[in-house]
Length: 353
Image (cartoon, rainbow, N blue to C red; front, top):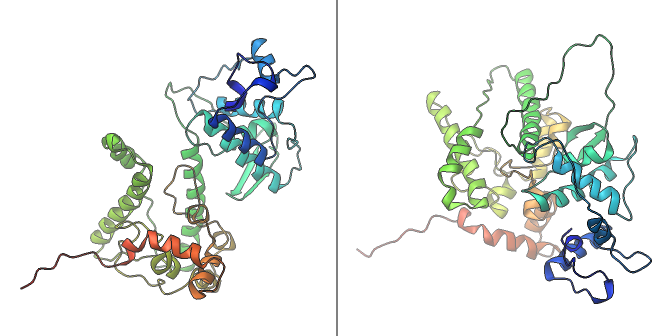
């Protein structure tokens, strides 16, 4: 996108030198099999420049920043117009193509603002409702029409700007949590569940520390707010906080937040590998949807999962932990070394008596 809009004073491909930023954008396009950078016409002029000189603009009655898809429509329009090898929209488009489009749109829209899930431009481009079964399982769905149906959808202008991605992430997490709570209630009658929404508390916390802005730090703060909440609930019930970390996370790569999800009283499955946890879940009758869902800590606005953060799957990590000759062993060690400060005892300054 950058390369498409810059250097307007030069109209020929032969005498134009891209900046490092433009070159990076171009390489990303090539890697994703997309051509939305300036391309030649039969006279050697750039297509983007011709459009801009003719007065190209984006017209929308939706104000920017209202979280209802104006930027998504723009991204979809750019992709549809300038991509030379685009994925064609159809009612039976396969899941693999939908995920690829979502990834492309997410990166394109993120160039304009914040971090995008890619869902808004995906829906605009396909012009079809999207059924979200999980982060990795998306599909199209038709909307049944009835004459005497119940319910209605209202679109109201609150006058406030908003972001779509946090709502999408919250929806996905709630779906997973609701399914898990329902399973627990049905199988174990002595279990109670309580939903505590910490969104506003975290927003206040983040605003109060805006001068100390750090994305990774705020992500860990989410885990620490959860920990504080769990200990308050435990105290009110004369109970303890139970950890859910497994052997790979707790003792292999240290994939947890210090004084966050690492702050617990007991860790009943900390000696089990992730594979053993999955097997235990099957034995206990946990639903396949929960067992097969992408592991995620839910700490990031863009919804990144554990594999994306670690750069390795849990299966590969387990193999590397157990075998020094494994091809991923050095990669595993590199991840582990960064997090040893969590797994090792806290340094104590000792004085000679």
